Image (tube, rainbow, N blue to C red; front, side, top):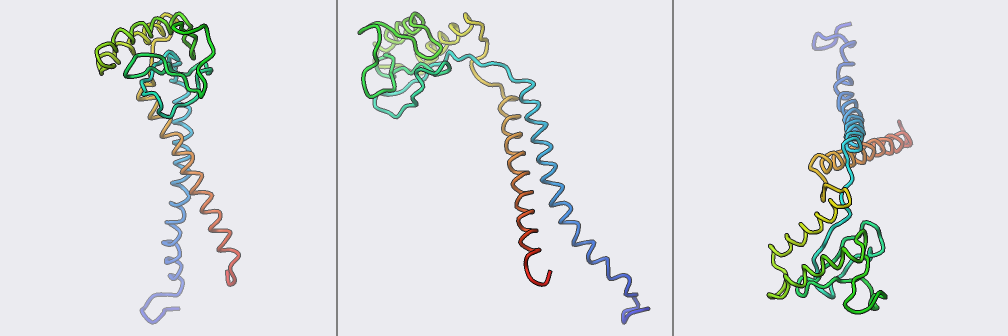
Length: 192
């Protein structure tokens, strides 16, 4: 039966189809984000290689530190001014005695002594400058290579695949959950 504008009433369903497109896209995009996130994390774990736990950090006495000296992957923290090893504790470290090195993180006592000997000699000229810090980091890398660790940091591919994977999964699932909560809320309203 033709309507007032010469169109039949059967054509009135086209308006509801155009409203379904955003809903379908709204559900497909989060699912795509979850899929990309899952694939990215799978790639991350496929290309990931161990990173050397033999790392040094430079700090100043009295600044806030992370207590990780007993962890196997804790970095050796060096004072920027004196080249001495800094320990994260209220009390002085219990160890072999003054002037003697103790093991920190993955570093043995002998390796700490090697690093401290270098840092003390470099710090005599008024603290550790940028070139001095690079020399200490090279020594830590050399110690790591002696133990079979070639890399001292993550590659760009590892960082990117981790970030994309994590944000893809979290973002995709968050949008899907939000859509579910919204749909549940709309179904409970009177008149629907």
